[in-house]
Length: 77
Image (cartoon, rainbow, N blue to C red; front, side, top):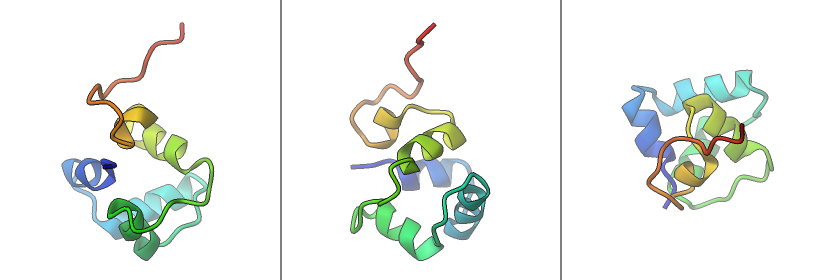
């Protein structure tokens, strides 16, 4: 189960606010689509969606996708 909604709520963002922020980052989605992604009723078509979302929340893609409970990113340095 992905963690989009959890991260959105932890950051006190509405669907509309998060959508606007993601649009600024180059993701052209609307709040209806984002809601479907949160509920896992639809899968993002944009291959960069998870990376942009992870960068926005400063967490790993694996965390957002629910593959790990480790929030931080693995260091590549």
